[in-house]
Image (cartoon, rainbow, N blue to C red; front, side, top):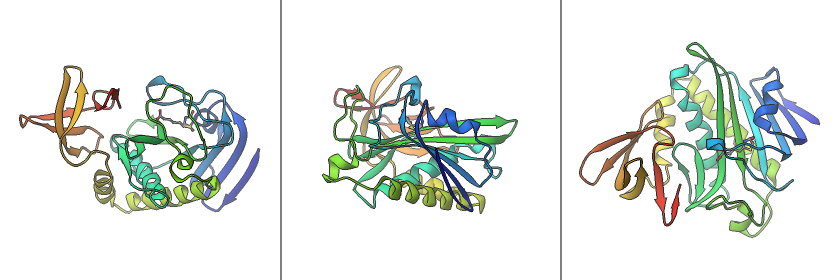
Length: 252
Ligand code: BTN
């Protein structure tokens, strides 16, 4: 284990762990931000109870721990928006277009380049601790798992990228977004998030429990609900996992 820090950051680098999201819970969070990275996770976790596959030493697998006293539990989605924006903006320094697929996947064109798993510990109306786990495909050449549409920076650019540089850029940007939220600029952050959404413009096919329909994005509520306007003019409101985007034979 190697540990390093600037005054606002405690950075712990592990060679191997089960899951950085699990491991970081043992940390005390002495600085503004604690980060645990792993070269390899033996039990990396994804959304919807899926596992997260990443070749040893090729990508970025890390978790961020913060204690955002300035965010109410009812407004926790702003943290998801902030970290998504930080990653989207960082990646756009390398490739374009990078978009956020609601609620918090990061896409390059129609392919997923980064996944985020957020786990909050609440205490009444407060967020006690927020763990943001990030799996970003950097230098992996091939994907063998059954994920529908993965892509890495290497596959797009044809050359390896410095993982540490990307990590630090994301952490700096995320810190800036948190500072904006603390300064009362949540609305602007949410607006920028909306502007950066995948499939924001025009009508697209979606699937919910009743079947497939076409709709366009109308907005995202502060609690994270997605608002879609269907072809018939009806407004539909969805929580995470209640709706997916139809892309060819995939439901994203
Ligand atoms: C997803 O399913 O899209 C979310 C993937 C999140 C993966 C990251 S890798 C670092 C952190 N540790 C985990 O076990 N999961 C997250």
